[in-house]
Image 1 (spheres, rainbow, N blue to C red):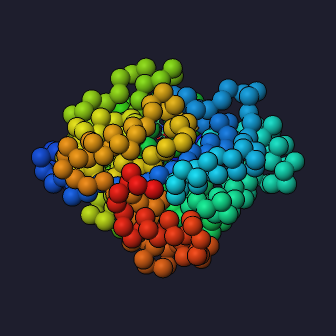
Image 2 (image 1 turned 135 degrees about the horizontal axis):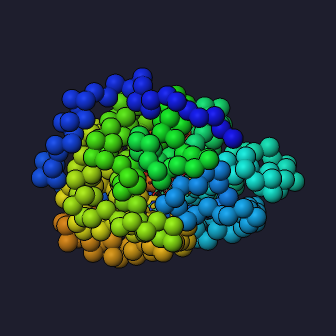
Image 3 (image 1 turned 60 degrees about the vertical axis):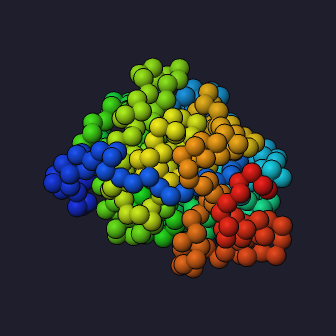
Length: 370
Ligand SMILES: O=c1nc2n(C[C@H](O)[C@H](O)[C@H](O)CO)c3cc(O)ccc3cc-2c(=O)[nH]1
Ligand SMILES: C[C@H]1O[C@@H](n2cnc3c(N)ncnc32)[C@H](O)[C@@H]1O
Ligand code: MET
Ligand code: SF4
C-alpha cells in the first residue's frame, strides 16, 4: 500500500491567493469565442480495466477477480480497424498500475515477457506506429523514468489533474492524490513530452479549488511549456456516481476560467459526448478532443460520441470552422525538440499513413473527407 502523502499539493508552486481570487471572478462574457475548433480522430484501447485506485465517480475499474488484459492480437485488431477508418490517434488509457494490485495481471504480463504494464504499453505503442497510428497514452500516474521511456513511442501523453483539492471521491485505501498527479505532470515537463491534462468538474471541489487547479497547471506550463491542451470535463452520472452533472452555467464559467488561466497557445478542450458543447462554444473552447468513428468511450460507455456530421452542424451553427488535428499539436511538431525521432519518422514516412498525418498536420480541415 502506498504511504500517506502529507505534502501540500501547492507547495513549491507559485499560486497566490490574489491570483485565485482574480480567477474566481472571471465570467463567460470576459472571454472571446475561439475562431476555430479542432478534434482528433482516434481509436480507444482500454488495455485493462483493472486499477490500483477506486475513484468513486468511475465505473471503469473492475471488481477483484475479473482482471484481464487486451492481448496483442486484440490490440492489433482495433488498431487496424482504426487505421482503415482514417484515424490518426491510438488512445491508450486504462486502469492505473493494475499490476501493483492484481497478481493475475502481473502473472499475465510475466508470461508475455514483461515486467510491468508500462513495458507492455511501450510495445503496444510500437505496434500502433507499425500499423500507422500515432500513440497518445494516458496510463495514469507515472514516475520520471516511466514517463521518459514512454515518451520515446508517444506523440503526446496525458493525465487529468482532476483537482488539487482532497475530495471524498478520491477517498479509500488506495487513493489518487493531487500530489502524485502534479508530480506526473511535472515529470512530463522534465522529459519534454507534449502533454494533455485537465480538471474534472463536479467531484466535490469548490470554485477556489478549480481556480487553484488551473493555476497549478499554468505554473507547470510556465516552467516547461509542455501543456498542449487542458480538458474541462464535467463528471457524468453512472451506476457509481449519482450526483447530478454540473449544469451548463457551471461549465461555462469553468471553461472561461481555464481560458483566462492558460496562455493562448494552450487549447481548452471540452468532450462533446459528456458536455452540452453548443452551450460552451462561446466561452473559449477551441478543441473537442479525441472523437472515434469506430470505438466507444470506454471510460464513459453510456455517453456516445456525436458523429462528425453532428459536430460539423454544431460548429457550423456557431459560425466557426471545424478542423482535424493530430494527437500532437502542430506547434510541437514544427519545433523539432518535442517529439521523439520515431514519431517524427512516422509523420515523415513515405507511406499512406505518413501522407495522411502530413495532410492533417498541414490542412487541419474538411473532417468529413478522409
Ligand atoms: O474519450 C476520452 N478521451 C479522453 N482523452 C483523450 C483525448 O480526448 C485525446 O486523446 C487527446 O486530445 C489527444 O488527441 C484524454 C486524454 C488525456 O491525455 C487525459 C484524459 C483524457 C480523458 C478522456 C476521456 O475521458 N474520454
Ligand atoms: C480518463 C479520465 O476519465 C475521467 N472520468 C472518470 N470517470 C468519469 C465520469 N464519471 N465522468 C467524467 N469523467 C470521468 C477522469 O477524469 C479520468 O482521469
Ligand atoms: C479511466 S481513467 C484513465 C487513466 C487513469 N486510470 C487515470 O485515472 O488517470
Ligand atoms: S478514474 Fe482511472 S484511476 Fe480512477 S478508478 Fe477509474 S481507472 Fe482507476
